[in-house]
Image 1: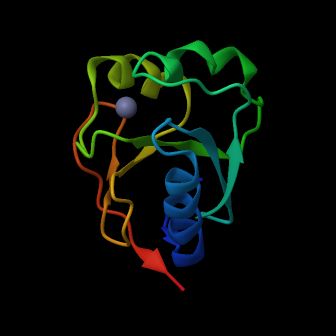
Image 2: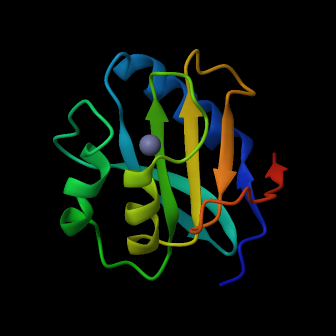
Length: 123
Ligand SMILES: [Zn+2]
């Protein structure tokens, strides 16, 4: 499935979840429907720290509609860490990082290799 965009409401939700979990990280799985990333499934037991993301890949649903991942960076740095780059290939192709203070522009979307992905925000 070609991904055509991400819902504005989902971006808002990711920012809210990031803020609610601060200063801890959250990690979630993104689900697409008909090419639009629509849903966030939080992974259980998320702990603080950059290595947390890699600990939970075995809990992820084997769902053909998994589009990628989302997680927060309480440090505010909106770029993938080394741990992120080893985690990304396990789960889809689009990876959102939400950075403190989690405002509406405090996010970026990355490809699996860590380069910036252009993704359209749709209503
Ligand atoms: Zn990270």
